[in-house]
Every structure is written in structure tokens, then in C-alpha cells.
Length: 184
Image 1 (cartoon, rainbow, N blue to C red):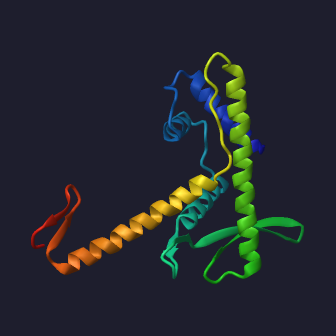
Image 2 (image 1 turned 180 degrees about the vertical axis):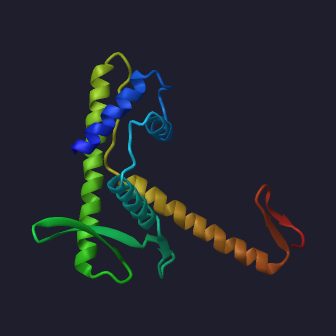
Image 3 (image 1 turned 120 degrees about the horizontal axis):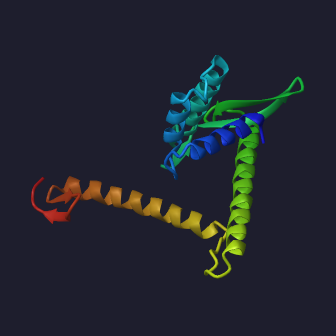
């Protein structure tokens, strides 16, 4: 864990020790920290904040591929250069295969790490609450992914059917009541 993360965790504890509302949103804690002058927005802090926001924005950029799938456009990949690690972002529509291979491996590793941590957290909670029914944690996402794909396909099919019916002119589609006979 980074020193910065430990400092911020200490700041959260100070927020709680000050008797502020808990549970709290990150915005409430941040407002308190700035108001109480416990967090100084220095130039390096602002640069990290802007970089984090840029990364978030890039990770939220999508396009529709030739098969109609919603696909993330920008992907980060960790690269070593001159003994230092850097994370470079590229657009998958133009990125070289090596970049995308690294990006997908990095993302898969992040998902696996998150799964391992949630398993540890659930196991710990269950061990501490033996008198209650255990919270199950299934880490095989095959069925979840398939259900999401089927839902996307169903939504796409409904959209096509809606466009066809609207073109017939005898039907109108309303959000509240569904299909109704009549003119648009």
C-alpha cells in the first residue's frame, strides 16, 4: 500500500473521530478534509486528480462495433521503459495487437484480484457471523456474462421490432403502455 493511501486512510479515521456522520460519502469526507485544512491541493495533487479524471473519462468512452456491440474504445497498458513503469492509453481501433494484449491481461488480472479480495472479505465476514446464514460468493461468472449478453440481444431485437412496427404506421409504441393500435 502506498504512503499516500495510508495518509488518506488516516484522514478518514480523523473524519470519523471528529464525530462527523458515518457512513459517509467520499464527497462528504473530501469537503470536511478541505474545509478543516487537512488536505492541501498542491500542484502534484491537482495533477494526479486531473490524471485520474482523464483516465476515468477515457475508460468510459465507447463505440458501436460492426456487429452492434458496445465496446470500450480506450485501454491502458503498463509498459516498462528505461527501468520505469508507465501506463499508456491507446484506442483499440488503432492500437497495435501487443498493446491490446497487455491491456486485456492487465484488466483480467485486476478482475481476478478484486474477486480474490471479495472472497477474502466474505469469508472473514462469514467466519465472524457464524450464528447467521452464510453469505455465498460464487466466482464463476459464466452464467452472469451469458445472461447479460442475452439481455443485450433481447434489447436489440425489441429495438428492431419497434422500428419495423413504427414503419408500418398502424402502430405506435408508447413507453408506458407498449404497442397500441392507431396512427402515430
